[in-house]
Length: 495
Image (tube, rainbow, N blue to C red; front, side, top):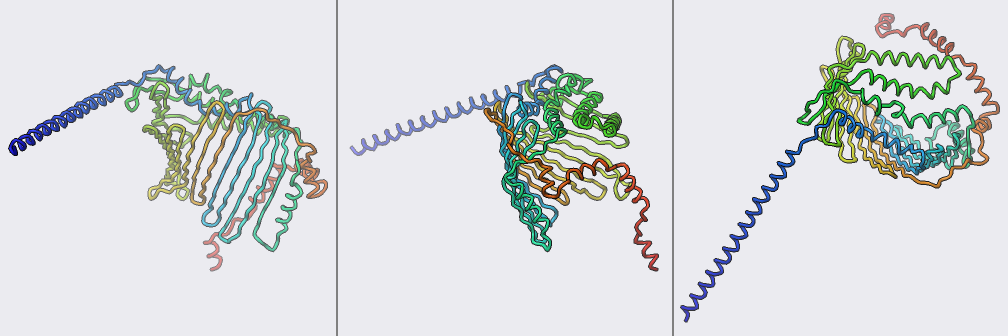
């Protein structure tokens, strides 16, 4: 009986052993089967991805895609200047500046504003807080709260609060005068009713809204901006190798220059001397522009996808008079690096050449942008960093709202700064802008504070002041001054 029991136990163990072995083997086979299928699946996806060809767009299609990409700034400008909307805005800025090892400044600004793009009316409130410390332990701190209204191209200001703390000195008369003026201006609307100023403001609010459209950059000039197009590849991607049209670039730059001069030409239309100076400056600018040549061009329109085209300046020499600036661009995934180098004469030794190198690195990921800018002076013996800046920007734009955050850090041999900013703007409606009643004239307040007749005295002074005569007398004084004695001459005279 015991023998039979042991035999039964042995059979049960054999059955369990076979069951467990078969179960494990089946699972191993399933795992192996699914592993092989998974490898085939991943391999198929990889082959499909590698076999997916970048579209070979025609030159006109490539230009259109690039145009749509470069119109991002135009979309932001259109949002901020949409003639049929009102905007509600908020701005926050925090800035820290360090001047050498002696001074530290802290400034904070917060502003809430609203504006009507159809009438150009606006109103705002701004609060500013600032502090300054230096190595002498002198501290300056202060704050003020200011309301502004811009109605019918006339500016109105009201100082709600003002506080200024200065270091104690023997003479506090300036501090007392500033506080007295601020106290007299508190809670009062003031304005400056000047027709010429109002006309200038009217021109300025309408001149910058359609700059790109007036230049026709995206319409007519875009077709002639590139020439000598040739189908090729760049970093294994289909591309069009092109040359920049110098004449078109000159026309674009001159159009922008003329646009900026329009306000001055209108403001001083009756002053022949100023108009003559403006025209002379324009002719000189055009002459300098005509002397700029573009050589050794390696420019590509690289096709990344149906909706993504990059302009890559692989190499470009900008020749002006006797100087040459070389531009190189290297694009790697989402990082673009620009290098600009220019040979210059040494300040200490004119026969020795120095090189100024500007490096700009741009990283883009969705709506986030990282910039870094470095300017170096390179000599035979050393490399000196003249300027460095880092800039982080995140941007969001929808049909009804715009927002961005910025963080900027910059430094050179005497200054370092960190500026953070947040801005938001959203479309709204129903805001009314009303001129303040009983606003006092700015000139009347100045006369009451500094003395009656101040406005007339200043007016007579500017009318009688002859710039040419004054500058000629200054130049004559400089030319007749005896040169300072050098150290060598002083030693000889002492001996």
